[in-house]
Image (cartoon, rainbow, N blue to C red):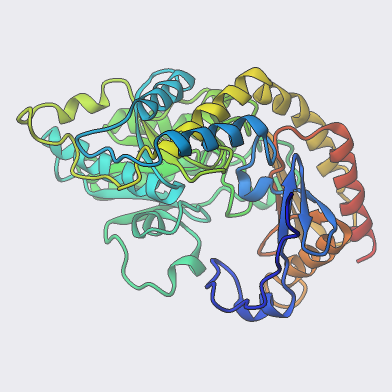
Length: 437
């Protein structure tokens, strides 16, 4: 018999991430249950999870096959580390993962997207050093990019508020311009304009020398910065420049990986293959923290020139390949395959786009952006930056829809098992709120 969840009377002990503690305590929003595409709040109300947790619950909440796999693994082997020893299920999970990413032979397992990004950058730097090109130390990111919150990811990330409190970060980080051009405000999917911005990478090469540039990291679809799909030809041009100058191309697919574009990874959707891929979130349907870095075929060979007893890479985490995470990963991949979750996402991308762009012309809507099952509706500024977004978030919560306010944009990334009925309901709730502003 399940007891009624207890509501905490102390909202101060937990120092919450990316949260105003004072604002939260004044108006706490608490979940006590979740199933499918819905959360159940402490107030007993069901709300549509318009954000898929935080871009991560791709198969929906509370899937019994994933839950049972975690329970079985906890009873059999709760923990074993991977430093010079291991356990079979981590190797099975890794094998299943690289099967999804054709052309990638290994995955270095981490515990989060932030760790995956820092790992990928360290791999890039160590790769060039192992090949005798240790002068390649520059890491290139992009404005408005989000690559997690560890020091490396913050360095190449392009969201100023995330960086301002922490002083000097990685000293050799440079940035491309963002691709959010005014003329693309209501583009459906990939904008027609903006491929020329990839030329910023060539300018960096011209200024600093190719012999100093190690890697460039971009999100195929910029997510947490506000949902910005790549302009047509943009990713292709980055690949071309990297190939010309021996620069590694890293795709941060923490958000886009595992079906959000209707394919296992966004690089498959866009037809541009990077050298390294960072992933997390949907890897375990967010049930147990797990992330990873996929390395293209042959890349690890550069690390095999030293003594056989020397570690390939002097890097790792206590929980890399954690048994519970590995079990959750395998079960999640089984669900994606058996229930054709990626195919369902691809089928719903059209109705999702139609719903979002049907909001064009409503009061104070200044931009609508979408790619796969992601989207953002940007509102006109109302006082301070972010005030309109916060007001919309609070009102929509009360109406039964959860969105993610990013400045004055309402970002959405629903579970990939969403159907036409829920999409229509999301559209109705958004339209009702926007029409009344």
